[in-house]
Amino acid sequence: MKAKTPGTASGTAWRHANIGRLLNNAVRRFEGRVLELMSERGHDETRIAHVSLTRNLDVEGTRLTELARRASMSKQAMGELVDQCAELGLVDRIADPTDRRARIVMFTPAGHRWLDAFRDAVDIAEHEMRTELGKATMEAILKGLAVYGAKFVTLDDVD
Image 1 (cartoon, rainbow, N blue to C red):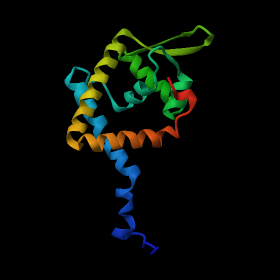
Image 2: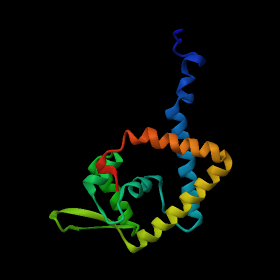
Image 3: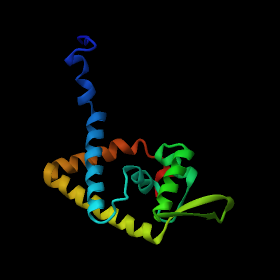
Image 4: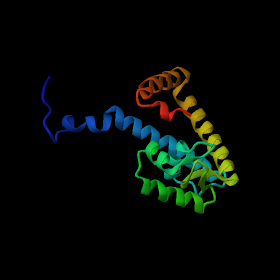
């Protein structure tokens, strides 16, 4: 295999065409559309960081330490995110009945309505993506990503 010279176009093109970059670009576009739809529906408070909480917070509630682990964030960073969402009225912290020292983060009634709106926005964005890419491509993407990502999921991640 021919060595690439650093700094040349062919030597750096991989930075923009590798699968990680392409996946990141697709996620940014998809999440940007979801945020746009949320804003159109009166949820302009929604930020991309809130998605990390939404993806990792179980409907029945989740401990902060578990949220941080699932999101690959520090407990402090997740705590700040939970505080932001609490100020928006989306979540609340309650005492863990199994350990009074611990807190469980739970969606509030307003948070459940927000979550429903978020689900609707995701459905619309996914439908738009399906329309643009076509059924066969979407099925291949979903199947491939599910297989590839399954190697990352642990039993603790399963709802």
